[in-house]
Amino acid sequence: MKTLDKKNRSLKDIRISVTDKCNFRCGYCMPKDIYNSSYQFLKKAEILSFEEIELLVNSFSDLGVEKVRLTGGEPLLRKNIHKLVERIKVNNKIKDVCITTNGVLMTKEAVNNLKLSGLDRITFSLDSINESSFKKISDTNYTPSDVIQGIENALSAGFKNTKINVVIKKGINDNEIVDILSYFKNHDIEIRFIEFMDVGNTNDWSFEKVFGRDQILNEIEKKYTINKVKDLAQSSTSEVWSYDYGRFGIISSVTKPFCTNCTRIRLTCDGKLYNCLFSSNGYDIMKFIRPFYMDDKLINFLSNLWKSRDDSYSLDRKKIITVNKVKDKAEMSYIGG
Image (cartoon, rainbow, N blue to C red; front, side, top):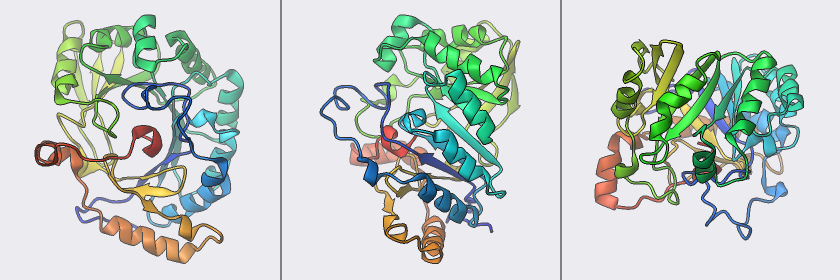
């Protein structure tokens, strides 16, 4: 079944945040001054069970969803996450299941469990390979080597189409763009550079802190010859280029928005749906799940929700910010990035 929104965009992908907790405190997502020891995270009873997530994925697949991405917080903090993957993979309408992780919990055992569960792909987050910069960005005691070990474990287990997301922030890690490409040049990995985005209200974002698409390309062209491989395709978030040793992508939500291609809906771990990464309000669907799962009513609600969707925040960002100055938005660690 094909479900279209008001801008004729199909519902094809769902991003599911399986936990609001994380073992990093990156400033653009979960700054430590807010997410500290006194912060109240969700209780276990408030979070969707694996069975409930499986049922929801099945309902979404009836509306056209084919891809599922598991996020957080840090999804590997959710105990036995591989068992959720197993449940989702039973549905033959779902063509692709992947996970986004900071990688430090990607032990050989965790990677092997995920491989056996049928997980298709892994995307890692690694914003710096410089130890001091990494600690400044992630605000943890982990090191780049901890993440890189997780990446190596995934590759050794046979995972393909592995990607590394690198959020670039002006004056923080824009000097590492070429270094990161060069470091992974002998790996079968696509590096994706991401512009610093104004997700949520706590990351101290401003246009002045954005190191944009063209600036990223200029840095890379100082060392490598690049050629465009892929434009923004339907349901894609990144443009892709080849360089001397492989491929890289750029996700340019700020300087070159891709709202017209967006086919994603987001589900939080406590059962709220968001039509856009920059949404202010979510739609609580727990009433369709507890105490009983009401499949027909839920599918009708989901269908109407998507059909009413008219979001295009990134295209309208400057106008929205100019008029409203501040727009309340869900935090990245909650909505799942």
